[in-house]
Every structure is written in C-alpha cells, then in structure tokens.
Length: 392
Image (cartoon, rainbow, N blue to C red; front, side):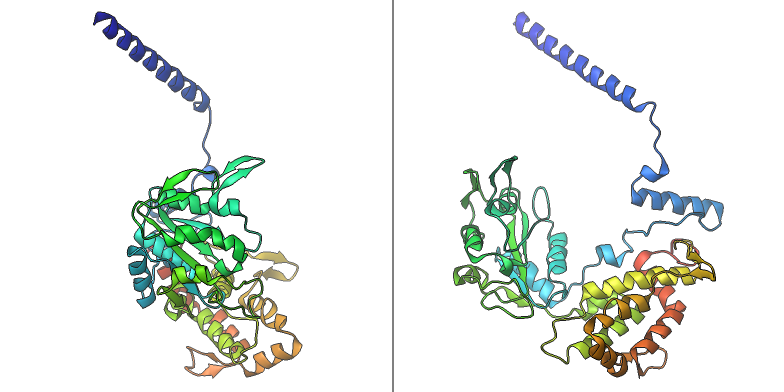
C-alpha cells in the first residue's frame, strides 16, 4: 500500500512540475508584449471610447465603432410574426421546414433568427450548407479528400445537434440531394442512426432539426431563378406539411431601415413589380445596401464624430458615395435606358414631409435633408446619439 501511495504522490509531483513549466513559459512569452488599442475586440473598443467620453464630458476624439449590443435592432432584433411562431413549433415537433420565395425576402435570415431563438445543439445553434450544382457529397455527409477526412454539414448537425440550414436547396443536383433523404426521413425518430461518408454510424443528437430555403417550391423551375433544379418528390415529401411561401416582411424592413430609405425602396418595388416578367427585385438585401450608404452620407452631413472624414477636393469637400449614387447609378440605370427613364418619371414614393407621393429624385433630395428623422432612427438602431457620439 505504501508503494502505491508513493507512486501516486510521484505522479502528482510530476503533474505539478509540468504545470509550473507551462506557466513559466507563458509568462516569459507575454511579459514583454504590449497590447495596443487597435488589437482589441471591437466591442471592447466601443466600451472604452464611451467610458472615456463620459469621464471627460466632451465629444470623442476618434471615430467610435458602431455598438452592437442590446440596443442594436440589426444584430439582435427578432421579428416574431405568425410564420416565425409556426416554424418554431414545427422544429419543436422535429418536422423538416422549407421556406421558399423571391430572392432577398429574408428566408435565410428567418432561419437564423429561429436558430437564435431556440439555441439548440451542444456546439453551434446552426450549421449552414450553401447548396449549388457543385455541392459535393463530402460537403453534405463528410468523406476523405487529399487533405484528409472532412466532416460534412449534415454530419456535424446530426452528431452535435442544432439546425441544419440547407440554403438554396433546389440548386442541388437531384442525385446529390438524395443523400439527404435518410437523415430527413429519420429527423423525428429518437435514437435514429445514420452512417457518415467516412463509414461512422452516428446516433442522432436530440436537437437535430432541418430548415431548407429556396426560390422555388422544388417541384418546378422558374425562368427568373436560373440554376434551380426540379427535385425528386421523395425529397419534397420530407417537408410536406411544413412548407411556407415567404413574401416581403414589411415590419422587419421598417425596423431595420431609415424611413426615407424604406419609402424609396417601396416606391421602386411597386413600380418594378408591375412587370411580372422582371428579373429584378427590390429586396431587403438591396435596401440594406442603400441604408448603409445613406447612414454614412448622413453622418458626414451632420459632422458626426462617428463618421469618417469627407474627401478633400480642389473645390472643398466631397461626401463620397451618396444615397443617390447607390440607387440611381447602382440600380436604376442598370435597368436600361428606357426602363430607367420610365421609372424616374412614373414611380411614386411616399413623402413623409408632404404626406403625398413624389417622384424618385425628389424623394432622394428630401432624404438628404431629413436630419431629424435620421438622428431618431440612428439612436434606435445603434443606441448612440450621432451628433455627439454619446450613448443614449
């Protein structure tokens, strides 16, 4: 017994000695290193700048990174509507969900918001497979490559739990999509087993669920969305009862966009949608693009400490890219000369100033002058007064 106690004590002593060596090595490596402000996490930078500003009582002396905490509707806002509630209940019941509709209507955003709400899985809330005709079986089920074994997204979600998001599912080659059938069929079955591309038999994690997204209903193809394939009905059948056609989410758009940008986007959208064969669409994605440029432009106009400086020119200062550049040059002019001219002349945008519809270019001018509405919305989105850079 004494020999065993002695052996155990020796093991403990060796472990302590190893821990001391590791600690000493780490201390030697870091003791002469300095951590600069630029190397800090962006959220920590924001906190430091805000605290410095509060203690000094003055404006910040350097641009402050946009906060992304609890006051940020862009980062944390979850719009809970009827579809959201139904999708959450479907996943709680282990039903496979399919969301389809026009590009940019927020299908993938909805899937990720649901993942954020449910917080399933032991590692990640969701695993995303970006589907295309080039998606390989290895990306789905895992398998061996010249670089060694690669885990697939289905394999990871099945093993660790969480939502498997099959983004742009109809773009998969129908034969490749067949690899999903077994797992989709057993998604609601407790204790189900599935074999990975590497031959490992894996028991299903209790939190494994699936959301597919796409531009078509998987049963047909549309000229507007090239690259989509008609899927075998054996795949379609695994989503029956939990298929949702997603349209524009006006409440979500209003929550994320400045009023002027939302009104302009709606005016252009209504004109575009009059032509059922138009391949263009005004999506949330495109309006968020305009929104970011408008925000940058307005921060410069009001001389915000959060704005980068305007560009110096021979004649004074240039604001850089503007909302007009983003909408007219970046979208409208791309419709072709005739359609662009017709849109500028015929499209009507609601004016919050006059409470009347106005032409597109007039609405853009009004947007540039609407400082009060911009400041109010910026505070709501960012939690910061854009004039002072102070938190609100």
